[in-house]
Image (cartoon, rainbow, N blue to C red; front, side):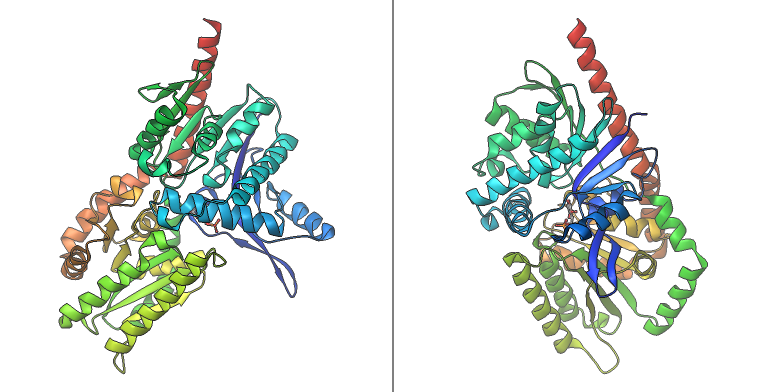
Length: 472
Ligand code: G6P
């Protein structure tokens, strides 16, 4: 039976070396959490990097064996590849460029060489496992060249590509010295998907201006093949979050937290450490709220979870220092003997704990400077069983297109952020419920299963269309 091969740089499980042997943990980030619950059906497999450097052959064999029991196949990266491909080209060149932080982008030929080499390595791993009729589904910016590499190996392959981060406007994208090779790499796919129409539109415009291939509606014709480009806003495993929040264990935990907090309101902020997430801006907003509205002091606590990420990259290290300083400054200025304005955690949390925090929070602050989608805000909404709670959401997150019942703000507008926090603090319960209910209806309908099936249907459709054009 034909299978689907999912390929992403990071596997949904990361392997770590501990004193007692190898440990397997869930990976962080939207891609892994979003797709983590659905790939295990049929004979489908997932190919990707297990997140740690393994040199020793026996260790590699052990990791491969353990992961294959869960339908995963590791691609091992060397230390140089982690430095130049992962930290380098992926996260110091593409990530800042695609998030409109071009001033942080490093243009380095060594990084580009490594990027090509590792994409080839992934291609080899796909070729070792692909059989005729399989669907190849490539994910995200670390593997932009892979669709074309696979196409060159097997011309008739069915290849889908989905990008989980924004695609920038032509004016920003064209700053990349390797812009044409990158686009051609992506165009090896039959279907290229993004979270929003704006991303798809930006991509189409870059294709026509850089590669010279024009499109009609959302179909690109390269003379041999039609390539479809479309928006597929990614959903979450709604049932998983809703049922977690409904469990007895969760109710107990919630009661315990509530008692400890007395009747203070809880604001929640959860992100990977990343400059695209707008964490310092959010902290400054919170500081201004306390400064301008003394009536909220001792009435609200900000729970801020920052999940460690890419800490070998300079910009991330600096960001960590900025956050530490800001938290220290705010807490030392406003704390009282019995109240700490910010409860700051720099570590990852198990799903059950996150779920309890979502359920506990009165207000979720999701205010990225730029985000492909952002699943945290969706997880928060799905966890609010009693439909209380307010979501403050940045217009710059892909999710804002669907969640128009959130309090939408521009994260650069500090005044608007403070106003939204103030509004959220005093929003009547009825209004909270109305907004939450609308958002829940949308997320329940357009969940992760819907997302996968609609992407796959569209991929089938374009393949059938290509075949009928070929026989005309
Ligand atoms: C984002 C990206 C993913 C990435 C994740 C975590 O969600 O879209 O591709 O895996 O961040 O980042 P990391 O660098 O740890 O894989």
